[in-house]
Image (cartoon, rainbow, N blue to C red):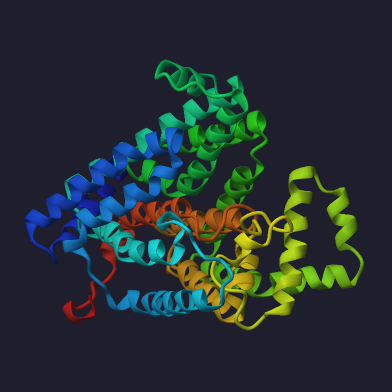
Length: 422
């Protein structure tokens, strides 16, 4: 095993040296330092300030903008992102929501974030090899430690978090402390797959994976935070499917994501037409019953304007039937952007899953498939599509997956693209 790890490490270094050769050594080392800072901040953001992911990833991207490059393989995603940006910006024209403050101007925030978030991902592509490895190691150790901490917090009712707040002169009620700490479980569930895979690649064994899984499960037991456990199961299933069929499984997952996004309103309409929806809602636990109530109202509104939707952030005007957003990503896309926005989002998800496809199974592909599945599963039952910290968390997962992909021995054996393809 040590000899195998040594051989894989040499292959990994060769791979990152090839990737970093496209830019100058100064910029490559600069991006590596930016990546190290990102790795250091990950566990602190997850525990103390998940909302800080948005400014952190934006600042990281700003620092890395000189490394921003678009490869030929990126073009389909870029076309969809560009088309989606145009469409969702245009939907402001017919939306009933009018922001009173700049903080509520979703279109401006998202459009400004796109190049910055792309810059953050390119930092992982461009980072110098030794700094890239160091950044990944720091990130894995930090998230492993956070998994242990989250286990303690879940079993103690967020006692450490409350002690920190009280010690800094900012005490917090136990219920609010539990809510804040539980949000970190969502962060960990999205980042767990690439962090666990990186831990194995760097010779740390199963320890990181076990620590992170324990933290997510403890949060569910202590704070009734069930969506992260759903994400953990989804990530595990996706990674397992990838191991069995590395070329086919990500494509099927992408197709499944496409179908879910496009078919979600129709499923609700079908259950309602069959007289089953109300019974399922009454039998569900309270938190899920509330979600299903939002979904029912969202489906009714979608039926009224299925083509172009009600406009960006329109769901924020639909209280009390819908509070802020429908707590379902596909329904929010349909509700606000209509079939056009939903189709663009479905195509984007299909392409993102497809990027994990490999001829042979490797850790990089498994991590990509797992992270995408975790993020998609939470988005289907949880946060609003346009919440900036939630979008930034997805970018953070992309950064880790990109860095891990550059350390993949399988990638080092693949033929490199010619200069005009990058």
